[in-house]
Length: 236
Length: 315
Image (tube, rainbow over all chains, first blue to last red; front, side, top):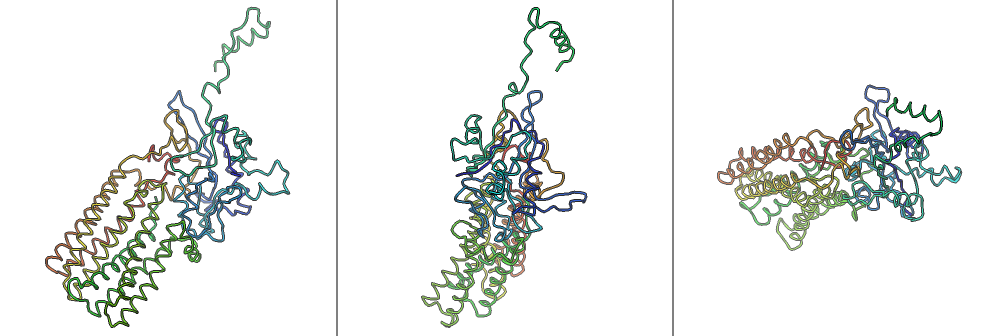
């Protein structure tokens, strides 16, 4: 089993709800706290294990805004686990989730250097490394209704851009999405073999409304004539 | 990348200590520049142990939880940091065993003493290489991920050690010429390998903003990092020098010229004249150069995270 996320860059609206839900759940869950530094000061900062960045692709007018949420990729070959000198970082055999044992981490930063994605952040208050756990304290919790046994970010996404599942199972929803939408991993040349995949934005033409069909002679009567007249005035 | 002062001081000081260990054992066994006296032996041994130990203590300054450092001794199968820690710790009993056997044999090289001396020297050199491999195995940092990285750590450590040895030999009244010549040669070697390291870093790498985001339809530009204040990632990975190749060139020139070539010339003067002040000046310059070199190793490093912050088009 290889649990991971599939994130649809076509529908992500960049609302940061996933990041906030992640912070809320994990700061009070088994991973927590995700410390904040000077939360009421001039420059509030803190530990986030899921961050959303916005990019512009192409040149105006042929440009598109793409929002890219980024958290741990739960790589098949995680360099962060290899370099960890204390054995605090590990990858679970059963489901492939990469975790940090908070009781063993000595806060040397080496795993953060080794990760090309910037998925790990040192919590200077606890002195240990924090990273996405794929909400390990949610997804196996049998006290929750089955539909809620998903990472907090996936449940929070209002655009349904985040999908959680087993990428080893070819019949799972996430595998089907990767197959049909040509999902891809980030920075494949780093050789980490990330489990998380991203679904590319659809071509610009696909997200435009279809061109208005020419009005037929006689049409649909007066209502259609008024609509067509209005459409001519209000240009998109 | 952010340059942690503790790691800069640790790698320079301990590196010099391990280099001194290797070269002093060589000088002692082969009587380079005349036989080594008892007082000189004590001074060299104490200097090496002090440099190594002070450096190792500095290294714990980089840990957020130093009291858990003992755990880093047991992951030698996968982690170079763990290998370095284990080798550095193993060095103490082996070096102690060598000194005890050496003293018990009446300061003569019996087969056992020679074997322990070789083992001590090998451990010192292996620790230097392990330190270099900590950086060389990180693929996310383009500058570090190359074969010359551990070579530089080894050669610079040995060169600093040769500088210290020159000073000790000159202060003890022995002929410092062989040690100084060795130091000059090692510094010149360091200048060559470091220059090759810099040259390799000028070649653009494969990773870029396109592969980092997977957006291949056109140039990718960061609109919003989503951060209102500098995060851990910005602090750790977005050093301004990494994108400033011109200022970087200035510091690289400073390292090659002031840190390697000038002290090499100074040691050449020592080899010719045996002058103690020249040895001290060359050593001070070499140490200063090594500190800048180690700081630059971090400050200039281009980590892949830079791509996500729009700090670079390509690595």
